Each structure stands twice: as structure tokens, then as C-alpha cells.
Image (cartoon, rainbow, N blue to C red):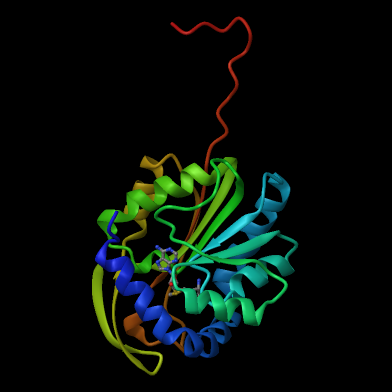
Length: 229
Ligand SMILES: C[S@@+](CC[C@H](N)C(=O)[O-])C[C@H]1O[C@@H](n2cnc3c(N)ncnc32)[C@H](O)[C@@H]1O
């Protein structure tokens, strides 16, 4: 099957910026107190559930995977860009990082206690998000948790320069209500959301940032004697 053009373009772009991204972005994560608070809740929920490891999908240079691990969560990272995966492995040699796409994961059904996608759905055209959310649903164990971070809004920006490199990369801002609706349709109802304004360090054009916690419900077991009418 041929790969969609946007996946190829995203991989090429992140291969180009992998080393510089790893210098520039992880320090910003240190200052994202609201986002880290949501990760703290997600870590508590997945630890309590104890239904399998957490996959950090679109893990970039691995700092979020490492943060989860520091919170007592067994976590590993997957990223589309081989050069980004190589950077993550160099930065965190004790953690597991693999190449792959959240559109089709090499993971068994129901094998994860949690999925985190931290600003990694922002390059997926919104009309293709149902494919990604169906994949999240497939790999999560019943009761498993999903945490998304993304740019809240309704626009597309085409980047031709980022992190000191020329490239070609689409970035989508999507409304949190629309994401919540897509998640619910995928069988992942939302438990909590947090939307924050751009911080003083961020450019106002970055807009609002959204964090959404969703969950794959546990199907109640049919009791003996129950009938299906
Ligand atoms: C904006 S960066 C975020 C990286 C990291 N999560 C962070 O917070 O810094 C987006 C990352 O998602 C990855 N990515 C984009 N689409 C992906 C896909 N379909 N499957 C896996 N990774 C993907 C990119 O290669 C890139 O590393």
C-alpha cells in the first residue's frame, strides 16, 4: 500500500530537524505546568489501572516518555521519523523507542494501559483523525486511558522553515469540541479537558493549547441468566 503524502512529508520534515528539535523543544516542556499537571493525572490513572505499558506515540526526542517513566509509569516511545527515534535512543539509552506510525501500530489489541499523543496529531489532516483514534481504541486495554495535547483552533499553517531548517510541513489547529466528538465516536469518551491561553513566552499566534483525557470503557460482563432480548 502506498503511503499517504502527508505521512511521507512529516517523516522527511522531522528527519531534517531531529537534532535541533531535541535542543529547542524539551526545555519548553519543562515550563508547561498545565500540560505536566494533566500528565500527572494520566500517570496516576494508568498506574492505578495496571493494564499494560503506556505508549508515547509521536514521542519526538523522548522527553515525555522519560517524564512518564520518572512518575513510575512503564512507558516506551514510537515515532514516524527514524532520525528522531535515533535521537531519543541516544538521549535515553535505558528506554525503548521504536519507529512506527499511529495510523497502523505494530501492537496487539488491548495491550496498552495508556496512550499519550503529545502534540503529535497536529500533522494529521483532521479528516483522517478517525483512523488514528480507531487505532488508539484498538491498542488500549478496556479501561485504558488516552491523553492528547494539541493546538486548539480551526486553521492550517504550512511551514517552510522551522527549527533552523527549510522544510515542508502542515500543522493543524483543531477545535477541542470536534476532537471530543471524534473520540466519542471512536469509543473513547472524554473524562476531562483543559484549555490554556498562550503563555508569555509563547507567540500569541500559537493560540490556545488543549489537553484531553479520554478512556476506553470497560464493557460490563453479562451475568449468568441475563438474556439478550
Ligand atoms: C510536534 S512533534 C511532538 C514531539 C513530542 N511529542 C513533543 O512533545 O515534543 C510531532 C512528532 O510526531 C511525530 N509524528 C507525526 N505523525 C506521526 C504518526 N502518524 N505516527 C507517529 N509519529 C508521528 C513526528 O515525527 C514528530 O516527532
